[in-house]
Image (cartoon, rainbow, N blue to C red; front, side, top):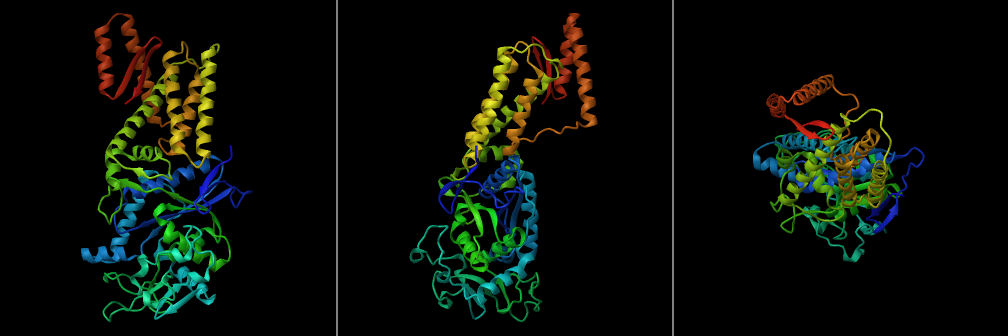
Length: 500
């Protein structure tokens, strides 16, 4: 089945065709954090959703070059620094580290995490290009993008220019400087007081870290800072080129952020910038959007400590990435129960594999039926993922595979090693696409191998004690084994063990 992706630009599902069809490289940019606070579960939902996109594309054989930016130049950082009596760089560096640690803990991977402060020169060059082409204009050190000079403005948010709201976050710059209220800022002037540091060279921060109003940079228009939107355009283009495949982010970024990114990038290059625009739904808490400004958020770090990454990822995968996700502790607890169920199945199959014959006997109709259903469940899982990464539908088939394997272990008179191995491999493979659990290392550690051999020997001793009707000793041995964190299960085919 062909992979189809819902494109916010066209409002349709479209067959996925990467720009690099021969090399099978896919380039993806995801808007990252403004590093002034902890990541909350609303942010984590977006990054997990696009990490699943990355994992599935890699499963399909693509090499995915992923970029998630870090916005470390922003007035929210300056405000927190001022409130806490710290320097803006100190705040930005602290939360950059914290956010990267949380990405790692959540299993979210990228090839680059560019910081806005490292790409000021590219931002200035991009603004200069727009100004020289007559798309941007400067007034008293502030530079604006003239939206009327870009005929496709509004094509992502599907708004007519006359209907676009002039209220913008960047309208802290006086609106009476603009030609049109809809215009947005590319560069903001910052007039420094005499005691706020010395001027630096282009591309270097001019104000020192003790200035809570934030760092500034020298530019052709004087001291200032870049606008929010120009930051992502410069970083994405620098690392991925003038055209790339996928641009992702939360649905709240469609307008104005992504709309403005398109306008300034395409006006500067004359090329279609991104092929597929993808947006994740917001996370709601008590029917309201989860946000730091409303104070109704739960940090990802808090949930990681309480539940762990796989539970969070399983909860996120349970709602289609484009739909709003209603957060609740009940949903997390349900995901925790489901994850425990899946893990228990893995352990059950692994325990059975230690007992079955290496050379399988004659296959029964039940063996063949089970093997066929393993492949059928796999196919249905992948069909769901091919339909715009429909993880909730895919999960249904993973749970179906879970039931299938447990039934087979319980009901088959003589389970066959190839059926168990194929089922377990498929279970790890599909779960790995969602990042729920990783495939086991092929090379078992020497310590684990020794422990496995020791447990096998102990199982034989216990079985011998039972055959000799020394049940008290056998029971004492069982208690000691279980106290050491190993679960035992007596079956008609012998005793299975698995680690708790």
